[in-house]
Image (cartoon, rainbow, N blue to C red; front, side):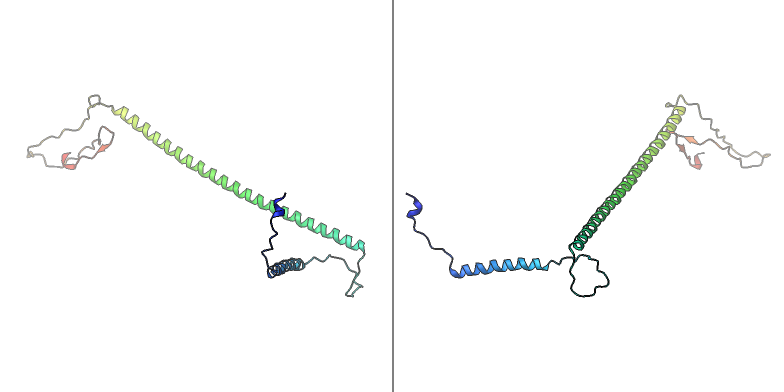
Length: 190
């Protein structure tokens, strides 16, 4: 035996008021759908009228309706082509912009590389100049030729026959330290 036959049939849990309420909801939803369809405004066909007819009501031949459909299809196709051309122009503008930005970036990188190369060349030139100076000066003091600095002569006094004239000091070569830098000796030690 079936178990279903043994179970008593249960009455519906919904009351008649609930069923009426649901029916109203369904009908109002259908009414909204119909109302939305009515809101759609159709485009009138461009049926070319002759100027001799000025009455309100017109009956059109099926041939004229077909011509109007064909004209409408051509207009839609032209609009579609124009939209595609517009999108294509936009893409081309974007590609040109990206290309210009890439060229500008490459120029910037090239300028930076040129700056770095220029700095490296200057440093190399300075290093070679220093190397040439240090090789000319030598590392040890003993290997250098002696600097011929004029010796100071001490005069005890001025003789009677000779007038005391200030002597012009000979322009001595500036002193150079072991790194090749000029040393400025204070005046009282010259």
